[in-house]
Amino acid sequence: MSDSKQGSLSIRACRAEGVPAVLEFWRAADATPSVTDTADDLCRAITSNSARVLVAEIAPSLVGTIIGTFDGWRGNIYRMAVHPEYRRRGIGRALVAEIDHWLVGQGAKRVTALVEKDHAWATSFWTAVGYGVDQRIARHVRTL
Image (cartoon, rainbow, N blue to C red; front, side, top):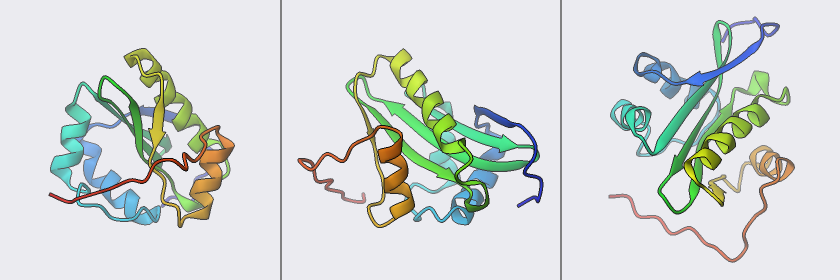
């Protein structure tokens, strides 16, 4: 991670050549590893019409990521992560605003953000940006 923290924030679509850096970034940002944390899976998301993968940079450093998807029914947000050295600077809010805007443009009327309940910094962030916990829903998962 670079020591440069004064540059201006830019958010852009992730490109295929940036995939290795994003996968490494998720480890540095304390994102819990997933079976989909592979170059092939991330490249598939980057090229999908139903997904948008964004990266936030403060040149020359990658400081945040977010993935938004729309399945025609509901929007979903995954892998919103900000490097620990850059948290509490509005980067997460900027990423969420960009993905929310894209999801609205896709026709989404409701968005679900998957958030690890044991990460207090993450749950408090999502509450602060207007996402409430839906106590009626439990997520059931099976790895294929």
